Length: 453
Image 1 (cartoon, rainbow, N blue to C red):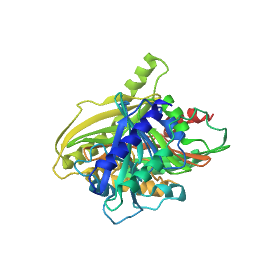
Image 2 (cartoon, rainbow, N blue to C red):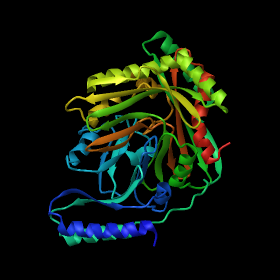
Image 3 (cartoon, one colour):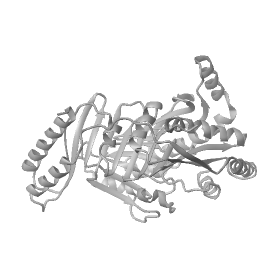
Image 4 (cartoon, rainbow, N blue to C red):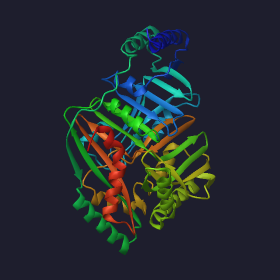
């Protein structure tokens, strides 16, 4: 029996002991045991037919994979009820321990998306039935149950045993994606250039200072790729960044590698960052330094970055008792690209929760523009597709903390079709053809993984 198989047996015994001895009360209960190191995307690939997700934070200190549903919050477009994050918080008691919900929100949760995005809703947060977590070098396998005080312990135990029996402990072998048949850009290059020129005229004569325009690129495969084996390859090719995949139902998966953190909360401490401006990495150390220096010295890129940093600082001023930012802009270097970055850290005001933080920070000028409302309206007018969860907040939230990335450098896999999304910030001085080339550079990390020319 494999080491993970032994951990599964230990979890079964721990669940039996917990259900036999725990007080008869409702609520969410998590039972965990030590586990061996596991290639989590390949483990997820070996467990099809159920909601699944994967998350690893930038830097790799925390990695998490979940299977099944113990509890879930779903919101539709224009849902007039409480914020989904407020509803999540109401399920997490102060002693909730390591319970975490994983999920995200659409870029514009007030508008109806197309049918490709229907399984995700305007927002969806899932508490997994089974999860494997790595924090540093420590691994655990856990099961969460929604305890019913009216159900006999034996009935709950049987239910847990049945679900645990179906949990596979193997790992699917790595495999390349199937052959590509077709690529389609929306908008195409001619339409993109026209849209950028029109936005530049709006910037020249109106209140708009920046608009982030995006492109959807559809790739069709000869057959449906496995999303988690695709993620496995994507993670190996792009080790820096937030790696994520969320599959609310079979055949529909949102996945990507984002460079950008929206915010991280540790109790009442908040971390955020402004990321904007792009150059590719150099082929040599000398060229890489030259490219980075050119980015740091670019008046156009620094202006684009300043819009983001100023807006985040203004929002944090309302959320925090105090905050501070890096004195100087630095470079965020990824596998193939580098960006301008400024870090922020603050102490949250009393009563400020994750729902309030997301409402204040999203969307940042890095994915929408400036002023925000006018830029979002311009995006809706110019883009020939619905963004869905692209560029929305995605991550996890628990009682003691939360961590959200901005879901860029991402794609929606629907059966045999992968829609990849890339965006570019348009400001005074932007060159339409250069911005198209920036989209290609941002797409390159995904394109190489799927074998596109």
